[in-house]
Structures are given as structure tokens and as C-alpha cells.
Length: 72
Image (cartoon, rainbow, N blue to C red; front, side, top):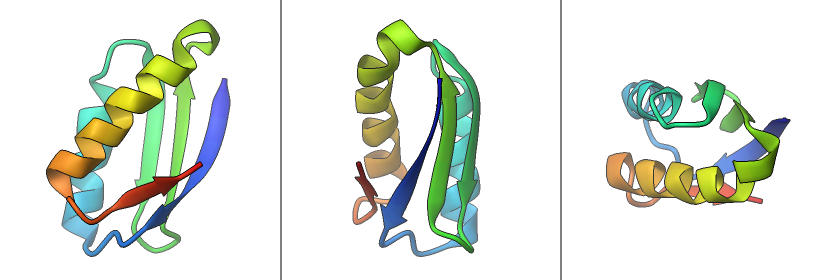
């Protein structure tokens, strides 16, 4: 399943790159893109575990950029 999400308060391109790398390493994630310019997250992950994967993605984002929120 491929979904796009709006990011709020992503402050730097370096943080976006760190988030993208960490998200891609999560089990069940096939691909991920974090764009600082458009403030968007695109993720391709397993359908049956998507909600659990998104919880882990939110945790990763909070560790890298505590103020950043994923708008669902």
C-alpha cells in the first residue's frame, strides 16, 4: 500500500534525510520518501501491518525531529 502524508514543523533537510533512512529500515517498509521542500512523507508498506508500521514511523519522526507531526 502506498500512502502520502503531510508533515508539520519539519525544520531541516538533514532531519528529513535522517527520517527517510530510518523509516526505510523498519520491517515491512518497502520504500519511503521524506521531502523537506514539500513537507510530505510518502510510504510504501505492507497492507496488513500498515497501522502498526505507521506507529513506528511516528516514533522515528519524533526521535529525529521532536516538533514534527505526521498529519493523517
